Image (tube, rainbow, N blue to C red; front, side):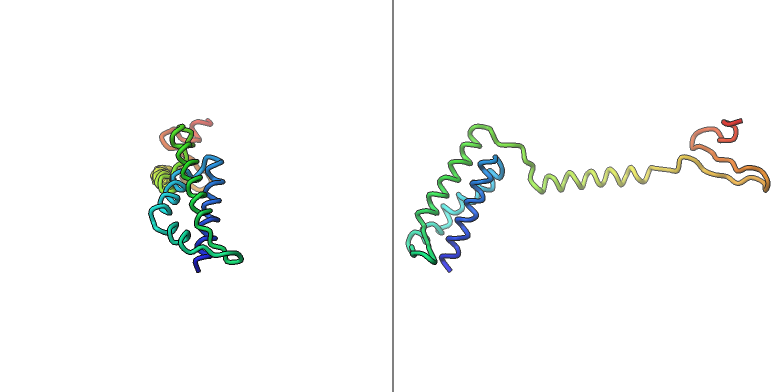
Length: 138
């Protein structure tokens, strides 16, 4: 089971390292790597190394954690962090836009109303707030 934790931790750290190279996921990578440092998992992986095929290499994981923290720190320090809003911020903005659109949809009325006149005479259409269509054409 320990080998699986080691394998998955390395895979996720490598994924975070690739994202950092593209300037993405800076906070996520930094938080995960720092959590690994303080969680005790690195100490466990280092205390119980195993050879392949079910390899556990705590030292390699620690080096990878340090690289991720250093890369995230450089992006934070240099101010080169891209502006990527969090998903909760995007959801909040989408909710506000949906609300605005729903309010706008309530205020939309038909541009004109058709009134039927006496049989045999043409019907009249009245533009909201305007003159009757028949008067405008006549």
